[in-house]
Image (cartoon, rainbow, N blue to C red; front, side, top):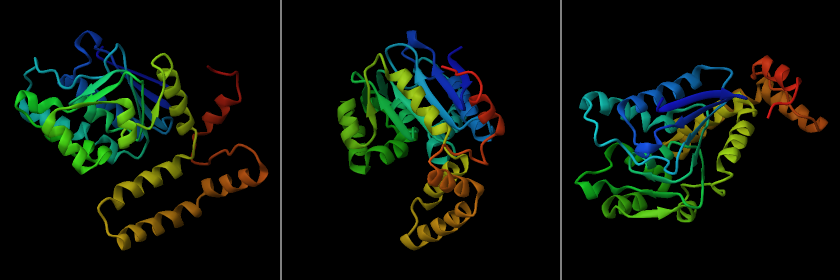
Length: 264
């Protein structure tokens, strides 16, 4: 399987599993990633999606040896490279090596991005007479307009430290630790209030491109709904009582499982 999918502790873990081909994305791999993230959006037992890769390369972009139907490819690319903008559940990405072209576009879907020190990023499409059309907006959101344009024009690559300085990468961890660290971070996110997270991501999505007045109206409506919710009442009560909250919007079996034997 070129995409491995596991779910554990409210985290849906997607693993790019084509290391001999530098995890280059085929049409089917793109479809599988989209389908998995879509399924996470509808599952109450999933609170976060984690994307990692096997091998020394995160993703070298699209598989240029494949020649799929163009209409079908464009359709799935439009879905794949807008996953982060449309998701109401967080996406964590752990980058263990090079993430180039479509690989960088996939990284840009992450709401939280971890990278190892040897991670390399870039948009080299111009060097083969192409332009990063489908990933451009996501990369622009992660790096800023002028930086995305400069990288697209030059095809230059950059390291993890530079990616952190530019805002694409949030955390850098040793390669030997990044997978375990990213799993731990995804689990921590997934045990937070599902309602608070979905409301927050809904605000981010709906306020994009709006005026301050329009964004303020969206914030007021969502804030009022959240403050009237059981999650907010439980969260404030738990804070006062110095205990862990038990979110009403969390599936009940989550707490039943946690009260059982510890699970590594």
